[in-house]
Image (cartoon, rainbow, N blue to C red):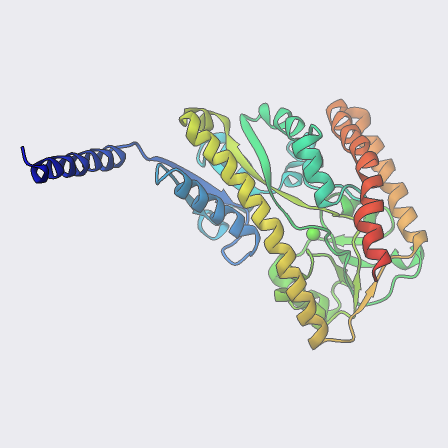
Length: 357
Ligand code: CA
């Protein structure tokens, strides 16, 4: 046999084996999952976390995991995603844990707590301080898993049309501030209102409300609040709001082990991406806002007001934990972790910035 024939034979084998490999990949089963978001199509960076996750899962699995993302524009039920994943109509959701406190109070602490941890502190708690285990324990009875889904960082205290100089100034103030922070404000005589996002700008402009909180520069800029309210207060109520991926446990268990791993890693990666994307968006948005509206005044609530908010926060939490031992376990874990982590934050990030201003 000539050398040339041998080479041709080898080449033929290579071509044949490549052909077999390709066709065996093509025959592999594609697992199709459906994901519902609480957010609409334009709610960047929240919606991007879900889309990026689906993209990573598809790419890393070589097409074997195919996740269809439906925004709330499609499924029309932003706050129905918990029940839809629990009931199996959807396999995954991208949303936020504290939305479900009315269904199950144990879900409250997994987003952010007033006066609680910052995003890096909280991520350390989730991944290294036992937080993720506590979150899975909370969602198990609903047949779901929950994973961090991306963080907004410190949320701003909100846009105010008038200055707050004392606790007295809060009395009668009409403000949009949802959730647990709204309850704290209500205890201070604030008239807490719940207005649809699309009507917030007009309500603030016309004085139907005096103040509102939204997120931070990244998402506030498109709402335009900076054009009509001169005071931008610093945050206290959502120091590191974490979104979540909710996954139906049965659907997760039906996936082959490698795809379970790919899905979990895709969620972790998409969460990190949202955190950095939001930071970037806020940096650019704040720069733009200040250039266009140099009169914006950044304010912190006076110490007296902060102390009062914190006192009421502690009182409300004491009431909740009295009747709910598992919430107490979660909050105790967070507070113990924060106590340690904060000492490090103080001598690292805090002093570094303070000493280099
Ligand atoms: Ca907010």
